[in-house]
Amino acid sequence: MSSRILPVLAPALCLAAFPAFSEDLTFTHPSGATVKFYGQIVPTYQSVDDGEQTYDSVVDNSNSSSRVGMWVDVPNGENLLRFNLEVSLGLKNTADTSQTEDEDWIDWQRTDIRKLEGVYSGNFGAIWFGQGSMATDGAAEIDNSGTSLAGYANLPDTAGGFEFRDGAALSGISIGDVFKDFDGGRRFRIRYDTPDFSGFTFSAAYGQEVLAEDDDADYYDAALRYAYQNDMIEADAALGYAWKNDEDTTEQLIASGSLTHLPSGMNLTLATGDGKDDAGSYGYVKLGWSGDLWDYGKTAVSIDYFDGSDYVSAGSESKSWGVQAVQTFAEQNIDAYIGYREFAYDDETDADYQDMSAFLMGMRWKF
Image 1 (tube, helix red, strand yellow):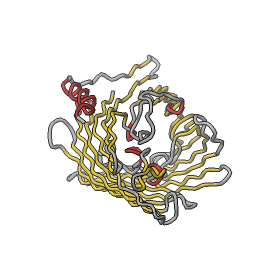
Image 2 (cartoon, helix red, strand yellow):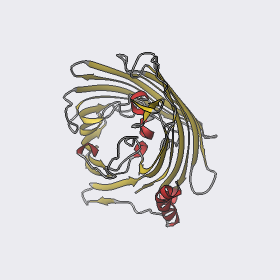
Image 3 (cartoon, rainbow, N blue to C red):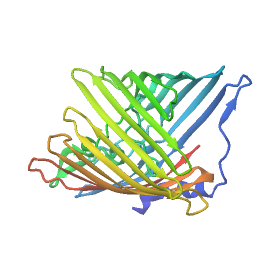
């Protein structure tokens, strides 16, 4: 195990020893237009125990994948025209590993284009066009705990490709099949966001899947978000509804919120979703703390629980609990993290599904 962990720890230890990387990768034209480059690298050690065997890998972290991007900002009077290009690096990641697939460590595809979009914003709100977030993207995953890098409501990002074992045999039912949070995605869309009204914003979008093949469906969604902060609390919440028009219409209803007591650092995160049409439903809760234990940066710890039902088949149960910790090294732009999670699944068949566990450890370096 130590030989696999070393590729993760070595970059973290080296970067931690470097002086602060404070250079801003922003370039300004005399007209006032700016170009800003950004990115992150997230090497991760993943260990999954499916009840019979343990699988160890050094991969990318699907909770917050390695990526590069750029923003171009062009002022237009009181309004602003922006262009965003962002791509994943196409690295083998924690959501794609499994007992049966031996993925290439680098396999960049066009679906790794995360964003290729423009946005025009002003007092009227914002209009988005191109590949990017639908209105409900993130609406099921609001999380101010500071530990989402190690684990959050979208459990398949931890080890979604691994199948539960029925006795010693693989069942064909994966973690990704039975722990969906129904969050919105990224597609080629047109989207409108209203201005902020006393902390509330409303968004609506229409999009199509242009990067993946064999998907001719029309996607629609809408979301209401709320944000509030004073000296005592910080609160964020979202409610979203999405539907997909294909041969059949499918619908999803999601909501999440996160509340932090700023003086103590205690925080509570809640999420729920219903896939409608017997696609499953769930509730999720996370309790955490964030504060300054050392001068390096914020320390955050949390524990969470996921309770789902009716995935794959009516009467099924999907349960999971996890613990997470993240330590920030502010001067080096590094977040070191560790997370552990257990998964349990059962249905009304005679199958004897074994529990699974997953362990993640790694670091994220942002620039």
